[in-house]
Length: 182
Image 1 (spheres, rainbow, N blue to C red):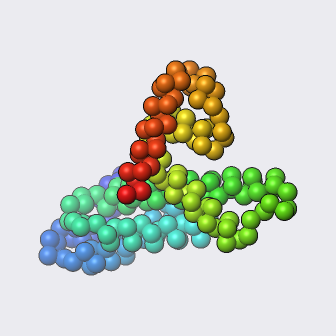
Image 2: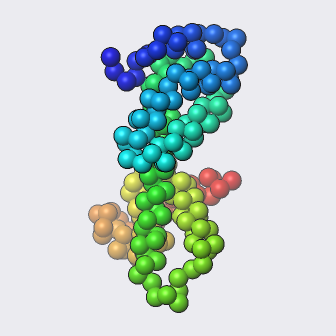
Image 3: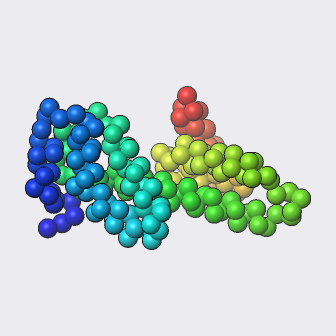
């Protein structure tokens, strides 16, 4: 039987009770699947601490869902929510590592305080989240322009497109960020 099928006979009763409260459904899901989900995260991440944090985040996110009675396959649903949280976690960790690597190459005089470092990492994560919904080429053009300072002509060359297309990509990214910020 695959991981996305119902694995507990309690799944049917957990999700079938239309009068159950959201909290009780999540509690029942937690009791039935928390060990499995923790193992799933441990296998994917290789870190028990991150696995435990993300497992709790998964159930917290599920608590925010309006209608839990529509869930037909609990493990498939848990896997979908967990995968999204894991992708965000890994992306944020990669951003943090890249930033810390860049800091290591800076002269000591320029190294920011821990508070400034935290603000910068949070800002980079927010920018990454804002750009998440963009097509890869639009995202790349925007980042090359804003972070690496490449000219529109250099970006056009890298992407094998016209300079006017680069301008359109950057404008699209800026509008997307403005819409996300509102």
